[in-house]
Length: 243
Image 1 (spheres, helix red, strand yellow):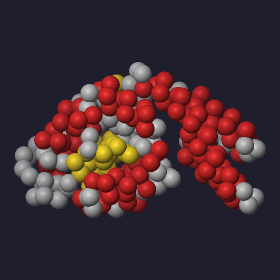
Image 2 (image 1 turned 90 degrees about the horizontal axis):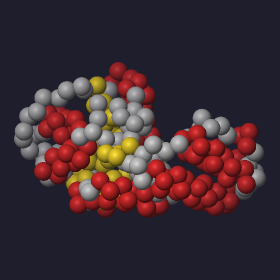
Image 3 (image 1 turned 180 degrees about the vertical axis):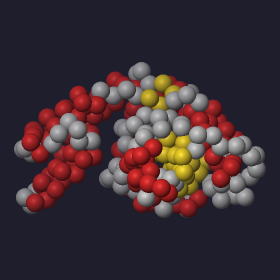
Image 4 (image 1 turned 90 degrees about the vertical axis):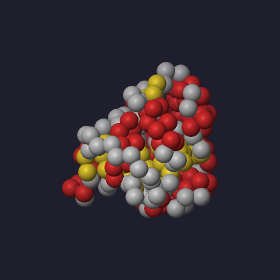
């Protein structure tokens, strides 16, 4: 799988129409903006919440992502015929994360070239969606702060779905609202979860090497393309997805 991804450090510009791809679905933190959430502190707080529900702390590690912690919690509860408790656990953990996200968004800044890239994508006639596992309040605040609300057609956050990435659900929700088929969309993100969700939804997956993005992990997850940052996306669109 690693050999399938194409790592592009420069893509030659070739202006022309885009008859096949109609939408770009973009991750937020690490892809479009830099949040700077204190990861270890946030994960430790998530573990505190999980422990408050009676789940053994030894089941988790600060190396686990929040998604991994919740997956372990669900399995633990299912094995004890207590899965009906999971929605409350899910809600409590993510509510605890809201505080970290809202604090981090105060210092959020755009990834270099990101705003111009979105403007170029809109000029190409593409629909743009934000698909993020961050809470909606923080996402909307970030978009307002960066002055790019008007460039975004749809916003899907964890507050609108039952499962976050790497589940394809958030992407499928965005596609349905946009009225775009999976094969007509590109998903852009810095995390292997973004890539996995894109592939499971049937979309083209573009990994970026900003945020947590690393070529090896993105390629292993199945990225179709890997580029330095979202700033390179307009050129990729015109050179690889034009008619």
